[in-house]
Length: 210
Image (cartoon, rainbow, N blue to C red; front, side):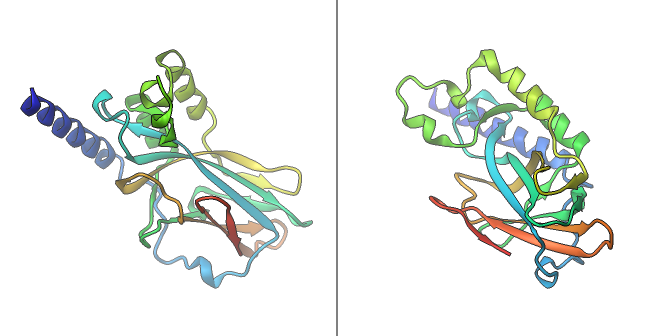
């Protein structure tokens, strides 16, 4: 039985590697020619929160995953409005590497094929918790909700935020991405001037840097 379980775990891990690998080319990863740190800060804020994990098998439902669904919100704080496109988002992980950001078709395919689970694995500490932290009854509807609210290109201003979900690949399965930096380079409407804002995830409180 032990040998069989090891075989199942190995097969499931290989399946997730294959699923993720199928979507890596052309995934909308940031270009090395862009240097957000060289662009002046703008009058807008970024809020990011990992909300779900995507796993390939029930065997991995309570394990860390390299595939995450992140809730992202952009809002201007001053008078200017800004334009955002998918290539404007850059995610630097705690080890300094960059997360891959899937475009909409690949994100939708992952949401269709994978099992959606809670990103915050503290649910494991709750007695009688649901596998993955989510009941089977709501899992499909939740995946559909995320699929229908993926972050689109658009404009945002003060009082008119732009928000939605992005699906990312961290390269390796992580318990947490606390310390990761979410950097957005947007263009100011009117003169097309680029501006940036970086939001860093912290364990307890969020420290924001421009």
